[in-house]
Length: 295
Ligand SMILES: Nc1ncnc2c1ncn2[C@@H]1O[C@H](COP(=O)(O)OP(=O)(O)OP(=O)(O)O)[C@@H](O)[C@H]1O
Ligand SMILES: [Mg+2]
Image 1 (cartoon, rainbow, N blue to C red):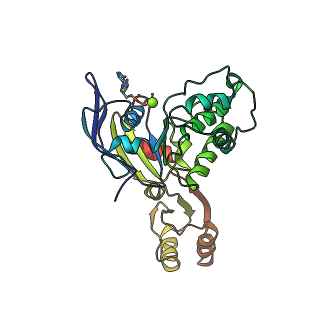
Image 2 (image 1 turned 90 degrees about the horizontal axis):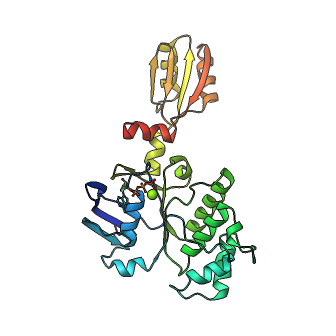
Image 3 (image 1 turned 180 degrees about the vertical axis):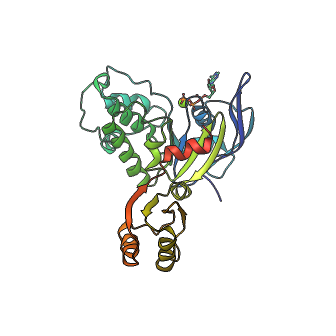
């Protein structure tokens, strides 16, 4: 398969520190690739290597299925750390300045500002923008030159819940329009809802997992406390042959998909089992990762 981004054993050292340690990243066309990791995990460094803002010590990068990185980088828009905005100028004037790299008509700039939802800010100076508005402007700047891929370093960092939702919705919207994303965050929850693939960075090492596999690993479990575990177990097996469950001290724990509580409750009661309590326990994303990273 050709990937939009593929890195092979990519390594970057700063002195003795291995910031990126043999990372193998695979971003597919149409992905929202969530790069998750704590402070210092190597997220920004990986992005800088991909963008050509840092030079690797070892390993390889392919962009759009090719080793011609200069050609590939022309199709990438990026927002690494906060963009250096001109505070005393409007969003439009800022865009004009950043457009020098990829000549853009005034109409196209207006369209991009509308597109990210700050087309109505007129002469308002960027210095008085909220953080969310500045992030939107940063994304509009990244969109100059009609990139196929956006690499965004912590675009949600520091936003309030409403701002987080706004930026997340914008990303999903752009993704539907065909743009592939690599987005970093140190908080899994921010990307948990929208990412299609996760790259988990931990002290320079990258581990990848698809959102689908993650969901399967984070499936909720239905816990049912009954008066007679053996009888309940037989009832569940008879009524829901595909159900996967364990029985422990008259508590049944169903971990497979068959977990509509009311249906199972009905079957148990019908067979004469007393049901004391049913709880739905979710294994949260964050817990899953903490367990996975062993911290
Ligand atoms: N220019 C540099 N010079 C020296 N060390 C660096 C440099 N850039 C990064 N590092 C080190 O490399 C490691 C990875 O840093 P990086 O900025 O990639 O992490 P990060 O995952 O982006 O963290 P954060 O969540 O804080 O942004 C850290 O230990 C950092 O101190
Ligand atoms: Mg960083």
